[in-house]
Amino acid sequence: MEYRVAVPLDERSYEIEIAVGGLERVGELARRAFGAKPRRVAIVSNRLVCGLYGKGVEKSLRQAGFEPLTHLMGDGERAKSLRTAERLWSFLIENRFERSEGLIALGGGVVGDLAGFAAASYLRGVPYLQIPTTLLAQIDSSVGGKTAVNHPLGKNLIGAFHQPCAVVIDPLVLRTLPPREFRAGLYEALKYGVIRDRTLAEFINAEMGRIHSLAPEALAPMIARCCQIKADVVSADEREGGMRRILNYGHTIGHALESVTGYRRLRHGEAVGYGMKGATTIAAKLEMIDPAEATMIHDLVDSIGRRPPIDDLPIPGIIAAMSHDKKVSQGKVPFILPTRLGEVEIRDDVPAAIVRAAVRATLASSR
Image (cartoon, rainbow, N blue to C red):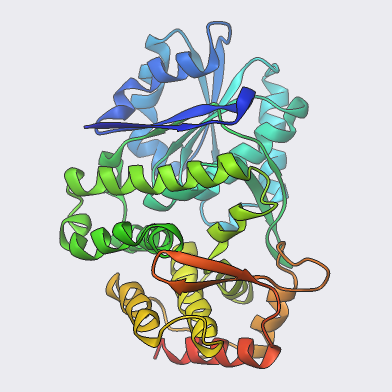
């Protein structure tokens, strides 16, 4: 069961390969992506993921003629920092990595973002390959070239656009993912349905049981469709100047929730789930969406599973965190608002009272 998704970006074009058992072919795919010249690759991972898959990936890379060196970093959003990036840069410098040699991100979104940021900045740019091991990373953060680290005042404020040379996705690795992490990824999968593809949202709803049971025949096409939507959007707007902003549905409020909780309480996907509900509430209060459609979106989000409660969070702190969001332009906070399941609009003129009311309703919904 294989799917290939092209990301056409002229000289930065690459392929996403979604294949059951694809991890066994990483060496072959890495050689195709990096070319014949590179001798070494640096695998960037964390202790847990490396313990599960590191030896197999290293073996496959050696069979393809690479000499792999592994660098382990911390886990969680708090590890996505300049300090962690500095440790990776030091590792590369100490091992005298050259511009022609590549990095491989083996892990979830934190590993991918950090490794991609290091690849973008080390020697002014070296190639890197993504091997995402969480559902969230497979369908979202590994695709599109957005790399970043966090700052105490906001998420992903320091970063660069740096496209990978390939993305290798094996749905089988999701079998070792904790259920909560898997559910967190499903919120992002549903996001694609809300912003672009009603059929995908309906597929997720209809196949929820098989998706939760990790059936490859349900997972693989869902992952492939999410990647195709992201590839289409990225190829039309690589640097988020226009249409790509629709991918931020749920993220304005979601990032603020992560920030005010110190990146400790919520998984990124859980925060986006709450953010999707908040954005839908704003759309309903602005009468941009039929109430029945808004209820459908709320129900779809809630059907994925429970999220940690957030009803104790301070509304002023959340509003303040939104003002530090990297998407703010000329002091205006943009919101991606659904007009129906499968379509959204970008608005930067939402009255403050409506934003506050939607945040209050979102917090209350977690009780």
